[in-house]
Image 1 (cartoon, one colour):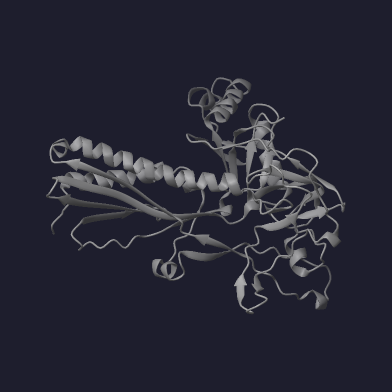
Image 2 (cartoon, rainbow, N blue to C red):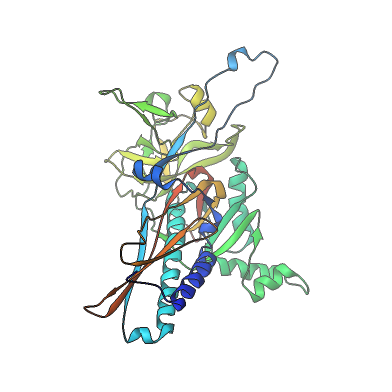
Length: 424
């Protein structure tokens, strides 16, 4: 073969793969789904991922009228990230193997960061639960609010994850090391010496070295929405839809809904809001939580319409699918007020149940007999790294590239959300 990897380069790649795996701190806390590469190529790198069923129970021996079709909802998941770190080294630079090793290490760190950042960004933008805190982070009380939201809406107790930006995380650690400090108290000592929170109020907590800020909502007050059944601002879940002109059947993405409001002036994607009289329900029992349901703006199509997530499944239409997936109880009003929650620009702290976030590792079919040297390795999560090397005799440059490909999706936005501090 014209190009081959040296022993030092092979060792560097193996070391990079091992440390790359260790660096996937955020993405290791999501559901991993490895798909057949051939199938994904033939479907345009898109697959339909099933959302969990929610079923109803009934009293009595006679269930004659209760045998109803169950609506299976799916969401589209795309392999949309193709990341690469290229670099070149001259014949003189290659005399110092440490330079190549350090470049490989840096490339690995960047790709791991890309995956972690993609997961965090999707959760921060698409998670619909919103915990608003009026002061700076103080500790248990903050995380307990995330716990309360999850419990009230029937989110499973295990596999809950909370990621905090460094300043908020350290603020909580300071609270724990002061309030719980005593000799031999491991929680207090870890908080004091290592700035470590560990598990708090049912959530495994992690410190972020990257952050994402959400600007203050500029929509202001006065925006209203008609929540009466006649206004048709409620949503009916459906597995498929049929085109009016062609009769073609296609899958429906039930994470989003278009609603009509009085105005969308200055409203932008990412804004979080509540609707007066629209309370969240427990997803299984359908009991009223007494707490307003939180939503996120996905896009702003016109001066009077918003695409939001999650949809308002209020059962005002009375269909079986609505009863199955109901997520709100609405007190009808022609002018229900929309109140925005992100009132001060600040860092977001995403939290989720592991089943809500999905990472799909992909594979690249790079030919090993095309003249370039190719090495590939796969982490325990199924994330593949491909390293390619070729030499150019005209310039005496050796070119390298390290590649990975993957997809990220928030498959259940009602099991993910964000917490923001210092909100008025």
